[in-house]
Image (cartoon, rainbow, N blue to C red):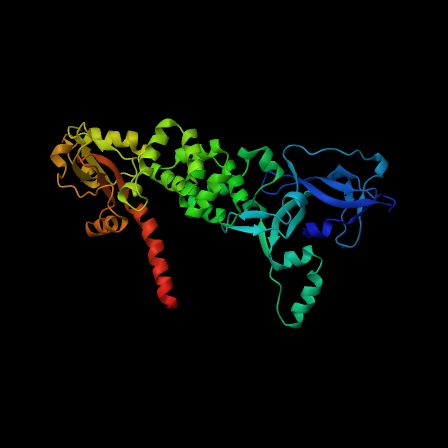
Length: 423
């Protein structure tokens, strides 16, 4: 059996074994899970406008000619309408003319048609079609467009996306069973998920993030543009938004909250766990483009009396909680910054040596009010990957990592270059 088009099946006449018309095929129902979802049922629209859900086994023949009627195995009097199962969905209602994620090309595609194929006596979905050809077929203009294209010696391209890389967006299934959807999307890099989110409208973004686990959602939001971060957090339920913010680094969560209306930011802070909320509130006290606004409080400080072996074990135990560990910052019980050593120096040292014997007491640091430009200059001048931020008494408040600075500096550089290009 050749590949079938959903739009060529939809609205086709249905006849009984004697050829008597009984209605038209309105939609196809599939088991949504699996590499190739299997058609299990179809909807019959009767002449009296009543809609029946019937098993696909009731179909005897689907002629290749799209103008020929579909033949049933028995008369309408012998058929009993059924209902949808929780894991079934309608293709026409939930996929056609809707957005899906092409997880192979990491982009959003609008579905203009759906491809089906017979395998082992069963009809299966093998892919979706975007692009101009699928759109023309959907509006019954494909043949006319082909003739016009032939006159000019061109071909109409086809944009087929195999179903095994497709993740539908908002469907009846996603609403009813959120934790079982977007499994393909969740495997992408957070930066790719962020790019996909930027192609969606606010409600679609919220639907996707509400279904993802908090850790994946937090990583994706962190990679998104600020305006996307703010809009999607506002669309989420407060409890879900708070859970995602708790998974983010405190400085990243503070950046998101600083772009929200004050009342919304306060609501989310009150919903968050007190300890996480307090860290974020402390960062919100600083101006956004200062060391205090850029720094993260998720760092690990080490006592000077620790041995190399003890420090390495502590890194193993606590590294997951820190944003990054490029350097070991040594502090006293009052958290005053005493010295620093690199991770390389630690690994190469004798396991029995104490950190106070290895650390460099002259530490390059900045104050919380230091501006972004100066922070970037210090990082560049001394070739640092992380820069400690200290208070008035020399206490370690947090660290600014080079990636946080680059995220702000690079867009400025690109903007300046774009202006020069057109001046």
